[in-house]
Length: 430
Image: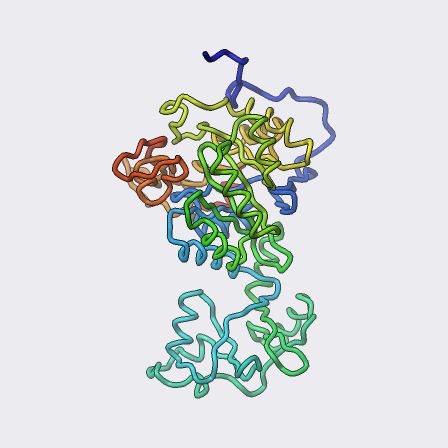
């Protein structure tokens, strides 16, 4: 028989008591750890939901200093491509630039530039740089079956040696009036690429969360499906920074099995596991290899797990209990769900969270993939829980340990949230 184990509190139940301070807002350091190895400049991440985070949201979040988690309601190839778009959107030095050969056609170059929204492609024979072709070279072309060698720039190429700094690259580009600077070794083999756009983005977004190679950070969600290792491998090949094992109940045998198998095959990959709501679950996930633990069972605005299944722990209590266990090993805690206002984020951090994951707050932004709707003269965007019927039919049913598409039990709802504009404006308000 069940027993009452104590009182639980959530965001609306608490306030922080103010104390004397000599700290002004511009003195506050918001840097935090997402996992034991990954550092963010703001304690925010967008949820891995199909109406919240795809590549546009992930790029916007990383530019502000946070991170986005690409949802898993898509094929393995599509999810890996979404991650690749984020990782290629900004670079210090592009270490693996796209390239074509002189024998490719202008159509090949045009298709590549259109697909990845780039304005030029280095041309190589083997690995040796022999030219460059840009969208300006294609502007007045009518025959796209022509070979690239007939239209590319091959004389007087402006290049830089391996080891050039961004400041030096900026000077070279400014002096030559070029937008792209191929990096070559002593034998003129292509070793990288620096673009003026990346330099401009570095200046515009000084707090961007980036990896060691200057690429924006990006995470991706995975489930407990039979092909999970195949999905993770594709994401790793796309240079994903962190994997989130997505489940409504993270303290279960299948989650531990999946976590251990991922860590065994990819020991250097950072893995977040969840969702949980107790100290015991936190302890067990950390012991199984989790690099961070995601806390929250049913607190989300469109999650009905607590109503449907009758389980959960009020979020402030859950975060506090999980933090007490996680601090023993220095493992970061992520508060996932229930955050409606900026003050809720403050409370979650005070309770022990390192980072806050948010869905509804970002679902109304331009960069979310949700559809626009007009209702009574106002603009909205579609927002749905990953436990809703529509989301589970699209691929998230394993998150709720359901398999039969004809007998799905919803643990989330579909709705709409008010349109908010750009992510950067929303983050500023938070």
